[in-house]
Length: 374
Image (cartoon, rainbow, N blue to C red):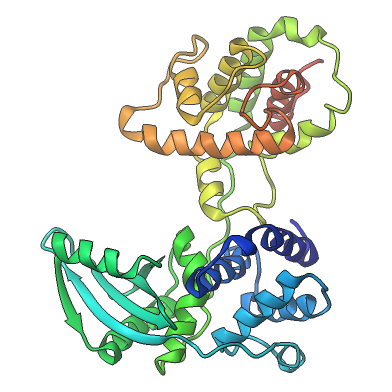
């Protein structure tokens, strides 16, 4: 699990590259809200508001212009998430946006409620689209800076009922409170990203909100020693000649990192939805994907769809991924592919490297408790 300082540094490094490309205040607010969402993932931080405070204090000691920009945005949020020491570091910011309209989307096709809150920040306007589940619990939050076009499109495609801003904000605040009372399953990515921004906008409309505590533990891979032993035997039999290959320089260090995609003991630091995806991959999925990748050869450019095809076409396994489940498994393997890029198994164009061809079977064997070269 990365340390707080490592996460803070990564956020600031990204900000230094990206914040100059942001033109509108709402885009900046959404970006910072997304950054604060990093440690709101279940299993990452036990006290997200405490990490907010630590982030502010850490930023105050930095010289990068992006650090001051982020501090200004956090100051503009006006939430009670910073302690006395952090408060002394925040800086003044231009006035908060004013509400400019509120609507409800009504459709006979769904029981969900969608509230649209509009805000004006000087000449710029933006909207928050808030999904409320039939149970009355906040389900999702999305942000758009295309105010007039979005409202026009929504009005032309679905019944758009104008509401008073105060009444709409009260309904959203009640849904937020219901989510805090019973957080339930982990939040989706957009809710995490826009959570702080929504809290700030509700605070500006007079509704204080509490920080949700996501109480579930990160998912863990299913352990099956017998399946591991059988899978390892098939792997070694299928790729027997590969055991004579010479280790490329530095490749051994990648084995543990790649094996941790198959078996991990601590899921902290990775988004829970990604862990859900990885945990859903069974031994046959990994075996088919790795055998297919090795057989495709060095230089092959991979995708999630290709790995699903490798699984379904693998002669060593008798099961297949059903068509109805294909989109999920394509996404799960897309998560794997991005992690393989980070490890060096694939290059930045998602092509298998020589190092990757050597690492993959050995990483899979290590995850299953064996030694591929034994």
